[in-house]
Length: 215
Image 1 (cartoon, rainbow, N blue to C red):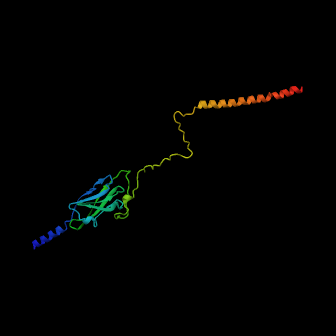
Image 2: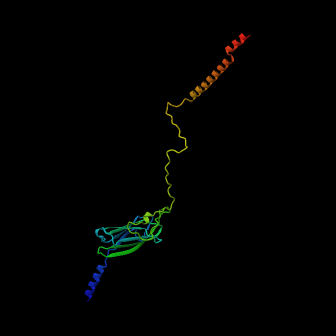
Image 3: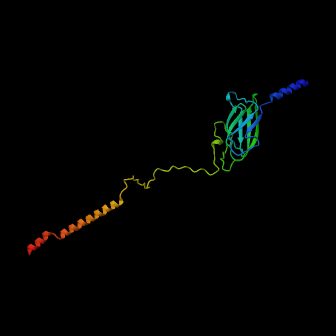
């Protein structure tokens, strides 16, 4: 009877010996100052993801306000299961996980870590409900807390109404003194010509001869 009871207890113990969590990143009870980008869990035995299917696997990460910060997409590789995250406000984060053990049974657990970012870190507001893989998630809803970077504005090539200086090549620069001298000389020649014409009109020789004949 005692032997039978021992075998029964031994069988029950083997059946309940699911894979156990041996490490996590971020670690349980740790404080991180930078958004890790992923939460990964390491188990003592290879996880059961037949054909790469992750049905039955989940890692849910919630912020202090209860909003969901994970992407909903799972990656399973040998003994490691992970998901992408985008953390939000500082405080205590809760990780709830479920994986399929190598014996085909699901096992689950939970732990917490603290996020203490810099004052100018980005805040990912999170989702009201846990997203499924491929749906909008916290990583797609980024809000900057610090002063936003200035927006670059293209400078136009030319502004309407703005004078554009004329560039003259060396050797073709206008001779300003020479141009001024020519202009003044032209004016003086014109004035001299007018004076000569007026004198000729006043001293018209034909008018003088007519007057002498009449006397």
